[in-house]
Image (cartoon, rainbow, N blue to C red; front, top):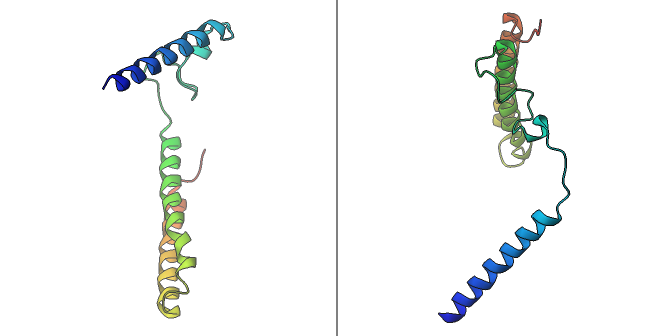
Length: 116
């Protein structure tokens, strides 16, 4: 029990000493508002939170996420070729790709992919 307490105390002392040395020896830089900002996305964290947000950008991002997930569903199709019947594999792959193409055509025809 005493050795556990001794090891814990020594560990805490070493950690404290290393933290103090790092703050004393660290390179001091000029602090400005941009470097202290927690965000790197271009939004001002100290400004108004009710700034207008482009709905078109949000829609493009959601469509990208949907098609990105569908790509992850397409990747295992190639590796299952040896494990399944070629007819069922081909039928499943073609049906899935046709559904994706119809979805893409629908988004395109609705104008969701036009940025302007």
